[in-house]
Image 1 (cartoon, rainbow, N blue to C red):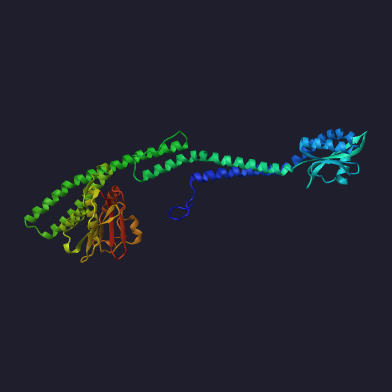
Image 2 (image 1 turned 60 degrees about the vertical axis):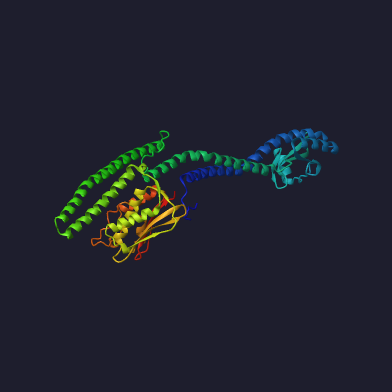
Length: 457
């Protein structure tokens, strides 16, 4: 079976279980059929011989008085042959035909006649006869002739095909009945697989259905217990992060006030500017932590409103310039006649600001940064494009992971610090809450373009 990517996918557990069970059934039925087919001719011949011997003796006694009257003998044979749907023939002691009923039978040879005289009957299988029986007709203790009987049709091949058809019908019924039986075994495992995927996506409120007390039921209960513990642990960690981030705001505010007072008292501006930049960076990190904690602890707190997307672009650009970025290096690329978007204005502004801060860190002096918006179907794409060193292809799939920091050579800062790795992961979370995934396009040495989309109103 081929997947969406064109590669061959391994069979599911349901398919494996069904095919294995079907193989066992087919092999068993085939073996039984082969045994029956192999030994059936011998069994059929024995039964035919026993029945033919008894019936032939009875018929021979009945026909004995009529051997001298060919017409009466032929009439008797017709009646008897019609009664059991067979072929009959009477021969004289030398093997010459006296009368027959039904399709002609080949005359018996000396070997068959001799065996019938010695044993009281002869039976066997001949190509044109099929299964036949030859019984001597006695009169006064002497052999006055021979009676040969055979079936009108080749019932052995017909019965063989009937037997094959019966086995085929049984196989079809077994294959049909195995579908619900196999599905009943594998469906609980499929439900557990889906529950595991939901746990992996962070839906720790989901619980696997527990049905029964068998091994699958115990596995579901163990998964739910694991989800309870993980949920409690992660919730505690998120609360701790939110509380610590909130508490950090007060000392940061005091540092910023102290910096202003130090400037007013004539302190050297160089060290103070360094402290101010570090404090601003720390404040932005705290804002990211608080925003991430808010989204994880209270995802229902997203407040959607309708507003023009260019407000986000111009607002983020103004904040970047206010933070010291040269206005001449910043380009605003907003497509005309953009529709309004339905989104959380505060969260989207935070996400776009994070992309601009990321571009500022990785853009060499003298190059520009572009921020803009364009329409894509029923969504609006917000993007930030820098002229930095770009990203190698192997780093693109992980760039939005929490705390992931790409190669330090991408940063233009002297110490190579590219941030704590929270900003882009927060962009991904905000984009997911608005129904899409963020994207990045980059060529090493030619910059990178980060973007996300918002639904139109």
